[in-house]
Image (cartoon, rainbow, N blue to C red):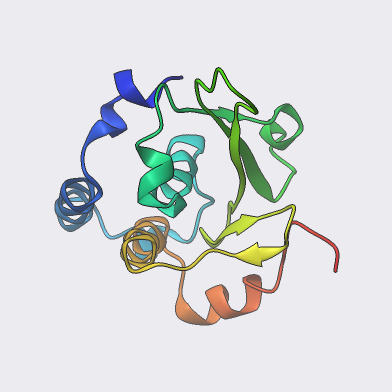
Length: 146
């Protein structure tokens, strides 16, 4: 899926406003109990985790890595690619924890943090009904081995 032709072409601040509005209008997810993030929600988080220069790459795409589509796998893993005629087409790898919304760079084993990403994660966690105590219990899971 090309990001240049997707609905995710909105600037991150506009996307965050839309998601905030949607969460305010939705039924309180916490009453229904926590659920895992969907593939689409995880894709939004992976895009938000990219640095601005990466998001501007020509014909940027974000594809799910097949093994992570299995419902029993705790992360959605994505590979970002772009149209690079002079070298590698891989722009990065991102692992999104289905339960917490944390985004990791699996090959370097670090969690990505940014203001925009944190805002979106807060919205997503409220949407799925994840409590603070559950988040702190679940966040210890990493997609890599140290």
